[in-house]
Structures are given as C-alpha cells and as structure tokens.
Length: 180
Image (tube, rainbow, N blue to C red):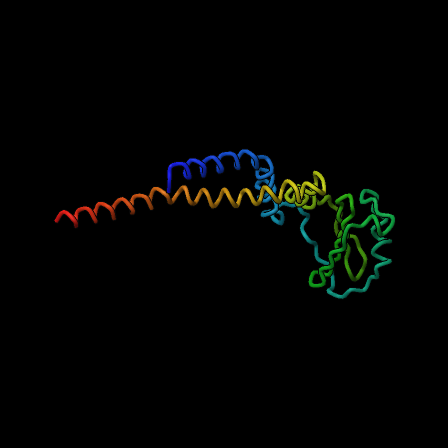
C-alpha cells in the first residue's frame, strides 16, 4: 500500500474519532450501566415475588391499585408506559411514564414494591432518544457507522506492519535465491 493511502487511513481514523467522541462516550458509559442494571437496585429495582403464579387480578384492578400510589402519578392508562407481567414470579410491574415502577402481586393485588426505575432513562441516553427523537437517527446511528469504520481502519493499521514485514521477507528471500 502506498504512503498516501496509509496517511489517508490515519486521517480518517483520527477525524472519525474526534467526530464521534462524545456520542460514543455516552454509548460506552450507558452501555456499562445497562450491563449491570440487574445487579444494582439504583438502576433497576429487583423483581419481587408474589404468593402464587395465578393471575387473578384484572387490568381494571391493576389501574386502580396503581392509582393509589401518589408518587407514581398514575390516574389513567395514558400515565402508564408499560406493564411487565411475570407469571413465574406472580408479579406484574407497572411502569409509569415518569419512570416510577409499582410491583403488584398477581393473586392478591398487594403492592410489593414501589421504586424509581432509572434503566429506562439510561436506555434513552444510550440510543440517543433522550436528547431528541432525531438524535437517534442523525447522531447516534452515524456515530455507530463511524465506529465500525474506525474498527476496520484500526485493525488494518494494526496488521499493516506485519504484512509489510512478511512482504519484505519474501523479497529478501527471492533476492537471495537469485544470487545463489
């Protein structure tokens, strides 16, 4: 490979790293938090267990029970981001749009736990949607593409010296064999 191509490869690598530095740092740090989210209750509250695996409460009861928790701020279905039903644990998790999570026993309707859940915020930071819906597509996606290019150019720059040494060794062997 010519000297110019290697220089251009290094320039691409250097400028690409500068362009994606902040978005990539955000993805790295939030990714680390997401890897350990079940290990730290501060990120994601642990799942409690109900007394039975039977689902005996209705959706209306889930909404009614959830609306009794003031800090969750749930009064109607649009205040709920999602329901996570865990039949094997006998619990339904009600996650409000404000990231408060209520865990309810699926048999008795007892509230097992009420905690703030940060994993959703961390996920939104991770994919860029926390900043703006367009940031996901126009900043974080291109950053991912640039990281892929950096990985390719980095691997290439790593192996070039080894490939060059092998090429030079072959040339030297050919020259030796011609002179013998």
